[in-house]
Length: 308
Image (cartoon, rainbow, N blue to C red; front, side, top):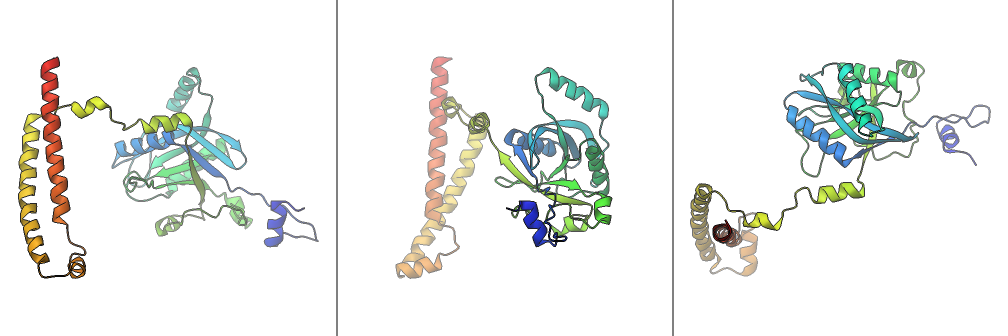
């Protein structure tokens, strides 16, 4: 049987004299842990509107997998188009301190932020990535956009540079017959900035261990005592006044809504109400929330008075 490389060679004209010629497959996947992703986003948000950078810790699991388990920030800032050079002294001291804590992972690449303008590598970023790849040819450059990232969708991408020798020889940086078919569609801005010419994109996957799942499930978990914590009386009074104003407006809209319903069939009224706010539902939600806030405030105040 022919291997994957032999089949690819047949498909891409790799047969020379009837002998299958294996092709190198560099279609790697970068697995980023949840704690590393959170730290990258938090670091990027803290540096807005400037660029920030840091190093990624992990290991190369096999020839096709790069595992990123943690990151740490570097004391560098940048402008809208570039980031400062890597502080080698800080990097060395940080790795020594991590080794003292029992962390055996190595540096598998670096990350930096592009706040608001997408994921791509500038000329300075490409030179920085090449300097990392001189230390390890499998080094990865990750770009994250903390501005465009929203809940449930993180704007992030991983890159690796294309050597000039490979371009001169006319070789692909990635085997085109690889089974990686789920790469995100590149943006026009990234293509204009040298994607697939000076660097290429890599697939990113996310992994969570059992401890990380437990940590994330308890991250925003509310305790029962927080439900009895009273609010500031001034803010509660302002909220009550604001909610009463909304209830007054919703009551008038509900009266008008009922009057418009008279003399019409149910189907005609449903067609007419498409795209409009349902005042009855909003009135019920506002009333329930107003009662709940005030009941919890009174109950929490009485408990605090008795106990303390």
